[in-house]
Image 1: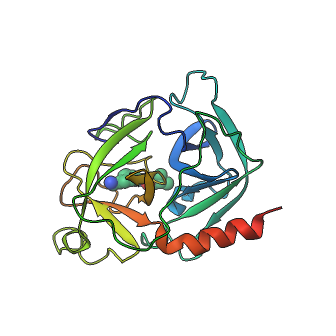
Image 2: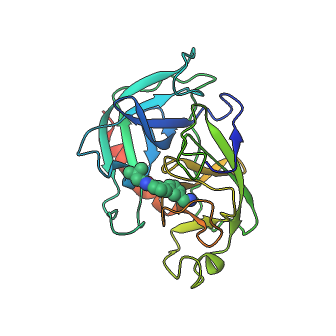
Amino acid sequence: ILGGYEAKPHLRPYMASLQLDGQHVCGGFLIAEQWVLSAAHCTEGTNGKLFQVLLGAHSLTEPEPHKRLYRVRAQIPHPGSNIHNNRDDLLLLQLEEKAELNAHVKVLPFQREDRDVEADTVCEAAGWGTVTHSGRRPDKLQQVERPVISRDLCNHRTRHDHTITEKMMCTDSRKKDTCKGDSGGPLVCNGVAEGVVTAGSRVCGNYKKPAIYTRIAPYAAWIDGVMASAAR
Ligand SMILES: CC(C)CC(=O)Nc1cccc(-c2cccc(CN)c2)c1
């Protein structure tokens, strides 16, 4: 997160850190007791290795009472996701067991009504992604407020040049922005997850490249279907 600030500890109890060999790779968030939603691009370069999911954390390194690392039973990328674009950039992770819910670990509801969030709505992004252009990684969860911009503005030739589909949304990226390692985290508007951070042009903090999110509502049926079919 560029231009943000340290989150109040455990006020975002749905936040997940997707880790490989103890290293934070991407964000994610708890959508059900045994399910985390993240971004398919996060599996790039993992060579098929499964993530571990850290829940209940504020600091990535310090011992905290409700912090717990969960193994993953299955990782299911959206069938339409691919490395060449940002379309259908969603990843569902089934935890090995149901997460123990408490004040520090809670499910975040996601938007099911497929209607665009109004431009200028101020939403929040949070994550353990890089906090400087040189790539400094924070130990503690960061957050930033960002206004939604219209798809027309985001699709302008000088911005993302008509690559933003109706299944994506954008926020202004002047100075304050999501960045490497924030992918997979939720964009929360009025307490509801409306989007999932996607890397987009992999540029951070440049107003010419607004932040891009996969809108969740268009994928509600896919998410429900995967969770229902894997239920045991
Ligand atoms: C396997 C993945 C972690 C590789 C990756 O995502 N790299 C990468 C590099 C630079 C910027 C970003 C990035 C992320 C989220 C939002 C934005 C822009 N707001 C950029 C992402």
